[in-house]
Image (tube, rainbow, N blue to C red; front, side):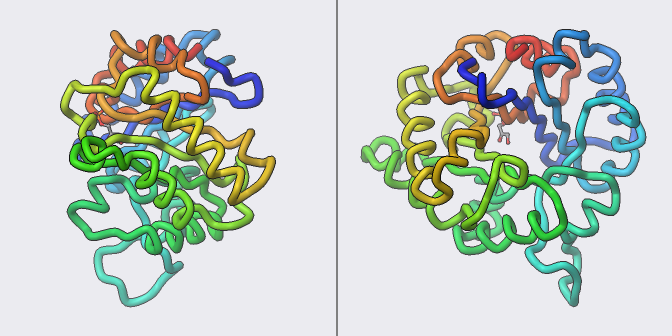
Length: 253
Ligand code: 13P
């Protein structure tokens, strides 16, 4: 971990998984955090919005943060089924994932939409985790850096800072597949993202955390987290198993 400037963040994205009984996972993570983990790592769990309230209650008086997985850019209005940043904040959420590749693929989210949502998160005082990543085809065509840099250039609002913004690099082909890029490939992308971020927000870019996501497991976390400019992980499947999520947190501590 290179994070002298940057405290690592391990974030769990539960996606569309979890019923009320799943709050037990949050309780198990809470109970399994060692003093070393608490001292060294920021921990975030993003359950489905139906569970945010109960998860917030479960982490009361602990350092674990709770976040949303998506938001509407506007604060309120006639947008049936949508949830605003203000509503997430009202429940006690402090982070929100913005522009996850599943939102981009299944809900046609664009980079401009990501930008608007990042502004919405900031307006309500939430930290937005802006996701970028290339598809398998884009990587095979050698377009990875072009794709993720463009996603960042459009998605990240001017004036973003390390308190209101986290970046997550999640190659689409690595999500839920058990495949991961090589450490060298991740280092190349993260360095390029930080350079691009510098063009958008100047020296503040050095303080913004850039997470890696895509098939992070306890068994590969240490190697992935040791890569330069990797400041933590965005974890899908493994965040649904308390022991695995704790193993990943331990690898960052
Ligand atoms: P997996 O960890 O299941 O590959 O999911 C990654 C992800 O999409 C987190 O947002």
